[in-house]
Image (cartoon, rainbow, N blue to C red; front, side, top):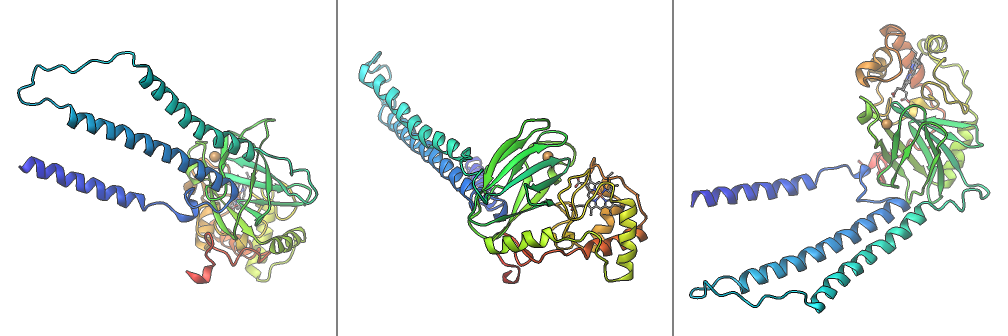
Length: 357
Ligand code: HEC
Ligand SMILES: [Cu+2]
């Protein structure tokens, strides 16, 4: 009796745990709540395959239990052997044809979606945006083709338009993945350019992640896709094209910071323009959602990062201790003041404006 109760208890515990874990996950990092064309297509495919699996499972289990009950050994018939069937034509045709039909039901939409997601027919049309994406250990760079705009860690796109991505890596293989908007795509070092497109349905800040193990800080290689209305996007482009990298900051501390930055950091970093250096482009850094893709944008975190990036992202390519804490604090004042555009700052996580939370 006790053993039975024990088993029942652990069953209960595991069921509860399953329910509990099923609630985990982030809404803005979920393939199950699609906010873009690619993600929606992929979710549909997942649902079709799950439906087919459930269908097969239910039928097989039903037959299994029917046979178990109907043909179990009965009292007084211990030696009874039922009629043995071998090579039944009808049965064999049935269990060959049914799986073929099921596979077709799965294959047709899958092949269709595969071609649909690889479709690039509109890429060369007038006004269609192409962004060159570069995966680096452990950050992302975005170069807007023909626009003189470059960003790092945050990719701005207009809602409702297809934005094409030409993707490569500077060092090892990475994988670009924004689960709520599209599927994922590897970025390879060398000449091999992979392509995909993004099409977001609604404004919001969507979370992205590197999905290919690429080194010790792979799990920290996060980025954001900021989808804004086409009007706002035009405004953003204009703001970004008019960045003055040498603009004077307001406070004395930030002015000193600017000089320190130009002397110590500019060899790898850039502000404005379309350059992709050894390190991220820091245009509009003061309005970013995160520092280095992962830290909350506070001055304290920024100073920590500048002095000891190695402790925050092990193995990353920015040297530690270039400047001391005091100097870092001035540089932080300068960088936090780099606000080149307001577009997108009103958005927080997916579909939730900041003041609604
Ligand atoms: C040798 C090249 C190099 C130098 C010099 C350098 N950095 Fe970096 N920096 C990088 C790289 C590479 C990253 C990306 C690290 C990562 O996220 O993996 C980075 C990241 C950053 C970030 C985060 C950027 C983002 O997009 O969120 C900041 C801020 C930063 N550096 C500030 C500085 C400052 C300030 C200095 C000068 C004191 C400096 N860097 C000097 C290479 C450099
Ligand atoms: Cu990576």
